[in-house]
Length: 175
View (cartoon, rainbow, N blue to C red):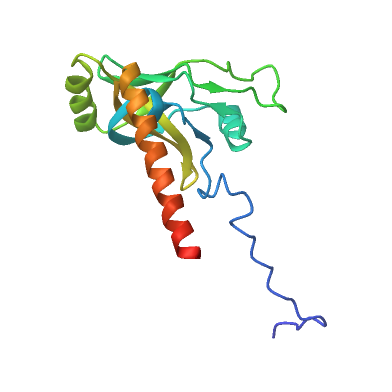
């Protein structure tokens, strides 16, 4: 007969999965905000990212930057260049290089599509955001076409006109 304990045990309290909003997928680890200003974003793809352990920890801590990064298709593989992931502060001599070239993971059919589209004049691959999904680091890669100066001015004019219209509507609702 099993022995009963004198003190009843409580079930352990569940850990809060939303303690860290970045690693739980609620908040992006890095966003390339300047990409929509400099490029027309035509099509977006989700890619996996091959990282070392210290790189993942550094991305979780928020030490990543996609500002000057771009994608490159070479030999049937996709690579991410110039993405800055800062060194992990508690790392040792085996810490990663911040600007190393990283491999992106996609399906072969998607890579074949991208090979044809990136060979067209003026189209390139730009990472727009880096985020966690089911504990894995993902990169949103956009097929982009560069904007000229007048395109940027037109976009800014349209944005200010929309903002003024929204403000006028909200003012009219208040009175």
